[in-house]
Length: 586
Image (cartoon, rainbow, N blue to C red):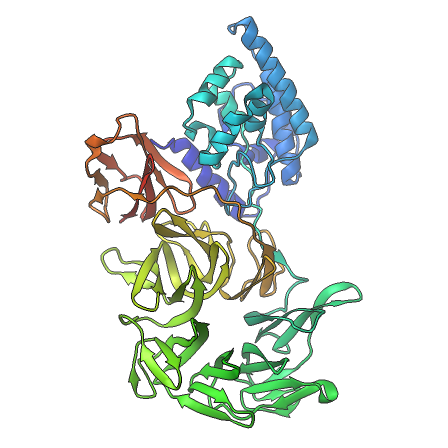
């Protein structure tokens, strides 16, 4: 069973993280670093006298220093001579550890949490003590399967045996183990553009890093290298509306939206940069808002409230009018796909997604009945995202991403609540998802508006990786860097995004469980689940229930019925040995 205290500490730590807090003294800060401070009877008096004006690294260092000093003063006469010697040796190692002040980075979870070993091979304090005693394999075994677990949650006979051999109680080890603050990945890019970014594209001119468009002063801007490093350069003045779409055509940028002028030149929702006079030129007339631009089969296409149009070098030719709006264009396996909010295009009946090739439109698979905003290739499959579906039996909005393999259309359920998915970005083994959403079923937001799709065996989950204060509308990848554009200004750590940020992504995740499936019922459930053929499973097996971010919320020996009534509504992963199942808790 989940240690309720540790879960409450987790909630407390996260809530304090979200708020700027004035600490009355050092004790209050130390409780935030490790809630076990509340249960110590021999606290140093200085923790109530000193202030808490410490950065996070100094706070963790001070925590470990005071824990070491306090543990050295405790009565250990009940320990054997060997245990006493081992304990003092471990405390000496702890002293050297905190003196170096090099601690794990929590780049995995958007809240304060332990990290046994981070991706930079930095050991936590407990892991380091075990390692220095010649038992590094034990630390790595824990990190491989329970890297984010609190000490009381770690299921390992080896760590229990180590604690006894080295004269520590599990309560003392739990007190040593700090939680590390979220090191949210996204960094600001020189205060951003001061508004909302709707589209981005990578530069092709050598020094250009990225072009952005949206609803901000001037409407378009370029992040380029100048005399003082990279900065934003506003090369145009858009008036009369916003820019929603960018593309390169004949090696020059094209801007589409609902604007009427650029640098004083009258245009009709679209314009192109030209080298003649280093200015801008009108590019025909599009009678409606332009939502996306794409070069397909060496032709420039535009999509929006007018449907689909192609540029013939002199004017725009409408290929298909819709009874709604086309939000996005994407080329996949030689075909052009359109996603939006429509049920007909050029007389062809379809529902929000349609395929175009050789002048013909065709519907795909079963119908998608909610507006589509994003299309992306991932794992050789076309992923389709849009407004979040409603689960009528729980009155809870859950995110569905549709998948098209050129033959059939199916969907995967992501435990997200909110409005919509607006953007995808394929990053090799991961698919990043941006939009307006948060974790479904939770009263608090442990992540908002940016996630990545993870696999748990045969199932998918959305792991929240940011806490943006407003939606994400655009994602782009380049050289292992993810660029994030939208309306956000803050993630509670950084307050100067101005609509855009970026971070370097790496493949650092712990291996997911195998694809062996477990049958449970009822599913969804309000309280209990039963496990089919549970009596055939080894009685020594543990039932582990994790949230979609991999945090263990429940752990107990195998039995016919599992009580989940204490868990909040949401989607969870159940694991028994190498088998898994996805559970929806109402």
